[in-house]
Image (cartoon, rainbow, N blue to C red; front, side):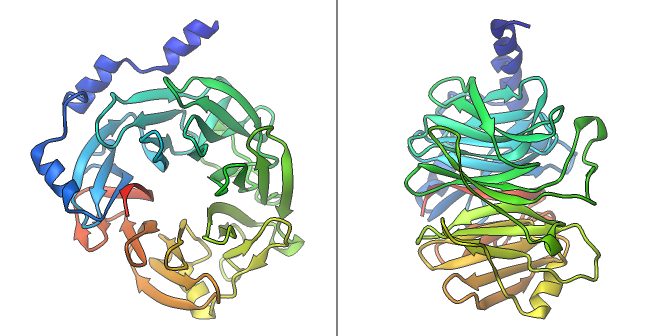
Length: 367
């Protein structure tokens, strides 16, 4: 297959997508949506499953009002947003092969790209500081190695290159404040699309956290888990106002173990695990599904769908300042005060909807 054929295959027809959407994407926002935007402090986006089993991505106010919906060809997972270019991306859930690019204000028609042959997406990515490049975590499943796909964010998001993630099973990824460094959580779990979501190497996992130069793709530094925590899969990351990197984990070992589930480090330092109270660790059920930092308030938020728990920690002291029960807790993102959370049962903040929200939330406006 030549490059022109590949590019044609990788772009879902715009007419077909507009038919799916049931609305003209070139149109301006509906008056009620524009009104909601005018009185909201923040706008968020998240993937969802509708009651009829179809999938989409929605933009919402901090009050949980659904402002817009876009249909998706399959279930989404993580999202990213560039405030410079006003582009948001929803990535397919592993081992999915699509990524949807849209503008939260409907200023462009949505674009769908697919992963190249021999790769699938791991559900996360991030933009460069200027929004001109999109990075995506991918799996080279034949070579059993994690890769970072590089896409041109200026026009049609053509794939322009790749470099290693320096680990197995890269999942979440974020960008340093100066735009020079990617922080990648390599979960350490081997997968292959022929086996769906089955984890193939739980007895010899290799979780790690890698810092990578955005210009060259070179490894800056790499942190592995201690030998006694090799089954602690590093999954999600965020960065606080001081540039400290926070990471959250999912444990693949015995259920009655109580390993640390989150931690932090700065460049040049060893990782330091967060020492949570035993009752909090038990409540998280060995599984942190999402992490977020509120830089203004100096807080770190964790959610666990398995434990039905949302936890807020003081970033300076590591003290738990809030712990809430939230059945099927899913996404978490910084809010005007603390965090906004969602659930698989349709809760978003204090609002309840009929859709099931997916695992992650991204802020796409204001705040």
